[in-house]
Image 1 (cartoon, rainbow, N blue to C red):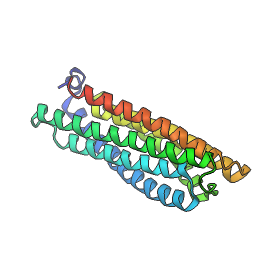
Image 2: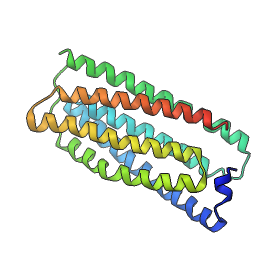
Image 3: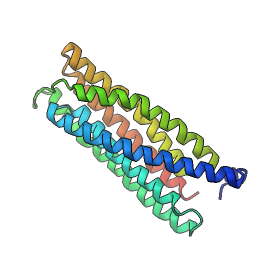
Length: 214
């Protein structure tokens, strides 16, 4: 148990854990909805930025389920839990790297003229704009809870949620440029931004796997 956790009174710890459950449930619900809408609308519009955004949301849901698993096993065999958490986090990291490879490949194809030009997507604009409001709020709450509980897993999850805010901004910029100014090439450029952030998320997730052993 971390020293920061020992400084938190039991009643406060209970409240923080309950808040963590609520934030995790909201993350799973929102990212699930976001993933379905982004992937479907991205496929229909031929937008690799939207598809990559949706795939990232799928992995975020997986990350949130790791938090669910970790919160449900407080007080059990800590060494076994940390080993299992490390394996789960490493799988999440590899998923992010896989997304980066796929999105980079498809974005490069479109920029080289080997695929159809992406079409405007009003649904994509709406979901990414909403994400710019939802994700920073969730990230703020997660950071607060992670600090109070001294949880490495929650800190990593909060960092990923914050990165989703930047991801939403990049995708929204690409979609808006295509929708309002006809700059179709901004969509695959935004896709490359998605790939870059996916690599960053993967690296951070892999690093947090090392912290699970500390």
